[in-house]
Length: 579
Image (cartoon, rainbow, N blue to C red):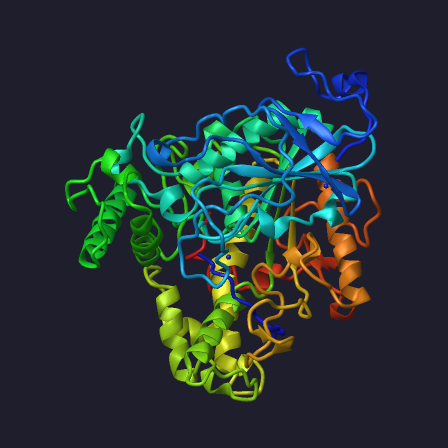
């Protein structure tokens, strides 16, 4: 029986260089069209194509915060492709990340201080001589929430000799609404992906000034950031903007993309619902008539309509938000593009977490406890856990449209008796296991198999740390949920960025191992080549070539040979999960 550890729920659908001579940069990726790089001993101020930016020296790196890579997408620029940023004449000297893009969901990970004026990026670079490999991070958050500020301390990566660029991009209704009236050049939607492409072009045009190597760019991200990487691998407009890819927990949306017609219809309904609700609530200044919407009136909608009603309507209509097949950014779905062999072929790392869906189960239980009168944070009280009677209906909802026989799958592959001896926690652990396998693990395996079959180098991992520190279900330093979350969705991020104290040497050792693999890959395309690693990471040639990432007491970092069987990919999900 597979040991299931604490599932932690995130939706499946959640510092720079020193002296460098111009001759060195020219020899390592610069060309006659590049502006001359800084030659001062300390690059406190760097001149980009738009103007100067000043660094904050911190944590062994230089951080350049809140650099505009595109014009603010407000007013007449709402729902349009990103426009070039206007040059500035005064040196920018931000000390923190810019405001995150408008957050459009009820997620507990929603960030405050959000703004439509949000197309900024942060550059974190090592001290010392370059040129340095570049890692461009696309944040997660189900395409509804998140921002660069979460990743403001990437020193575990940067201090190993890479530049990390964190990117803001439009989210939710502002980033992915595809109302037909917004169509330009025959396409509407995917503005958030266009923002990411604009940021990648900024890197190509400017990163040499930060002692970065524009010819050695790794695109990476987790959750929605990971699926964004999949989208770029499938988008013709992203070709030549990066050289390697890393996908973390990002294969949940390969077959969930709506066609342009479907997304247009859904977007029309979303807009009408929002306008009607706002009018009913007495919101003034709405120049749109439901059913007769124009691009001009949409772009003039009052802030209250955007923030409340449009955000609510899109979260309800599209609980799992992913980019659509707009015919321009994405001529075909990600799945169809890979199946046709038309995807961008670069060395790739692809991975998943052992208990991905535990995050969502935990969010649901935490919500029930918060809604109680009074709120309950007693872990001994298991009445808020998923009940046995709710197991099958939960799975039925997760598998709707797949054609599977829920009772047969549960009875044959995921009986409650397989998940410990405590009846109160069995349903939560079983549902987490099933949804993880169906929604993350098996799609990730199929993606790795497809890339390998195309002849591209690919390395696959599973993050397995059952002691990973949770972020959901903790109050006053005390964990209060009924079940452990284990290696839940997003819990790997604390090993790549400093998100908090890891609390023990085991976890710190795992952080060292993971950041070495990640930066070795960014430097060379091989996670084993460079700084020493605890175990050889085998190139993926089949399901028996997966690297397990764990603390020493959980088995340590080692090769896994049973990933397929552990996640029932060739049994329970052979017909359902294909790629």
